[in-house]
Structures are given as C-alpha cells and as structure tokens.
Amino acid sequence: MTRDEVIAQCTAWPGAVEDYPFGDDTAVFKVAGKIFALVSLGARAGSVSLKCDPDLAVELRRRYPAVNAGYHLNKRHWNTIRLDGCVPGEELAELIGHSYELVVAGLTRAEKDKLRAST
Image (cartoon, rainbow, N blue to C red):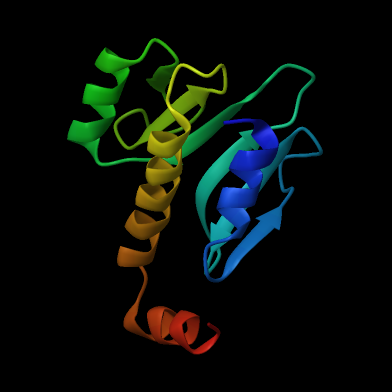
C-alpha cells in the first residue's frame, strides 16, 4: 500500500479529520479530536503509526520486519509500520480500521452519538 492509499484509507472513516499539528512532514488523522493515525510525508515511501491492541502489536512486530514499536509514541499501544510493501495492503487497511475503532471505543457516549449523527 502506498502512502497515498494509506491517507485515502484514513480519510474514509466517519468523522476522520486530517491535521498537521507537528508540521508539514506528518499528516495526523483524528476522530473526535483523538489521534488514530500518523503518516510521515518525507521523501521516502514513509510510514504510518497506528494504535493497536497490545497483544496484537507484539505479534505484528514478530511477524513483519517493517513493524516496530511506535516512534515517539506509547510503545505498548502503538506500532509504526514502514510502507515498504512488507505488510500486505489488505492487512494494513484492517490495521487502520482497528486503530480507528480502538479510538472510537474510548470516546464518551456523547462523542459517539455526535459521530453517528454526522454520518
């Protein structure tokens, strides 16, 4: 999956907003003000950082050399994935959805209701 495809996947989720709070080199995707993905925009193929269930995060790191503990993030709950083709596109799309769903699950009832109303 290319960086552009990752960005398209991130923006497709209900209520997803693209932001640049850390500068022009990192696209940050949020839902209800909470981050679910960070995409590096440097010259190389780049990477995406995604929230992840801790047990799954460890398994993914064992399975794929392109998956590492979250860069500048809570290493227990975040993975950074190099976009070098090592992780199949379908699985990467599922991981983006997993990250989004983890963040939505942690929202308040009012935030969830507002999100549902906007879709």
